[in-house]
Image 1 (cartoon, rainbow, N blue to C red):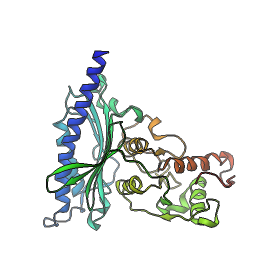
Image 2: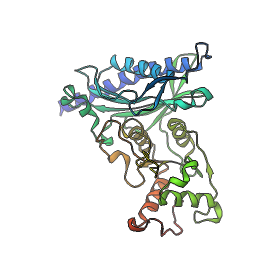
Image 3: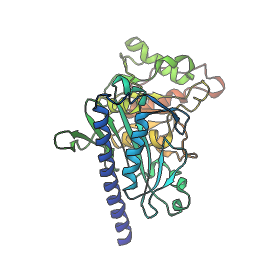
Image 4: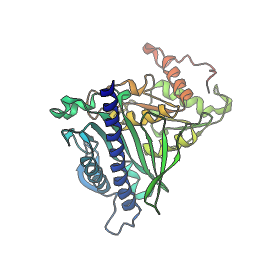
Length: 338
């Protein structure tokens, strides 16, 4: 029992040190983002590509260097980034494994829209020293901590170590992240949904039916009017939901390469889901909780539905109401959950 307590204490200390080092990297990145583009556009592409084949921008690589450097100085054994193909071993005696998207929403850089950093922290199994990828095959519920930094009008950190979700905001005078909300809770009453409606024609029937009923507003089965919001940055859309409630949907669709959506399970969906559940919300792939998934590949994709728990459950009901042999024949009536 004492050994277990010591292990928990060591893990907690390792997580705390890692979060502090990441906060320093986030401060440096925020300062760079705020500078005028005297040395060229940070959103310009480098000619390289990340693990997924997407074009890398100058700031993508700056963010990768800042955070990988911070994590090398931390008690981190296994490291995985969107910007690299394989997992790496940083410190063989480290206790943690960190998966990270160093710069989410990089297409927003040159239009001065919010961008961010998303991360997930797991315990490192002993066998990860020989094969760091092993550390990233754990179910999402085994996370020790998760969070995201958002660089916008304020630089904020939404984070959880499994004891609720907290909100910190960077005080640029003191240079410290200040706790402003110790128990963040996703509001339940919002009438907002976030989805890229330009892909409507590609959606599968449960998603199009759900959005159709939102669009019908007070005249439809939902019996209320809704507003649509879409920023195109996961951290920005998620932050709005943590502040105001509602639901975010990035489903899979019929386009080539989009069958499982475009969000990555390890360093996008899993950390956002952890934060959402710790804030009283929910996150699923449309049916099953995201945190119940164990990645089978490092850069695996997954659909993501996240937000107020009742709204995520309603999307699940839309999926269950469709019989697989005939997805174009929904049996959707008025529901009590709105």
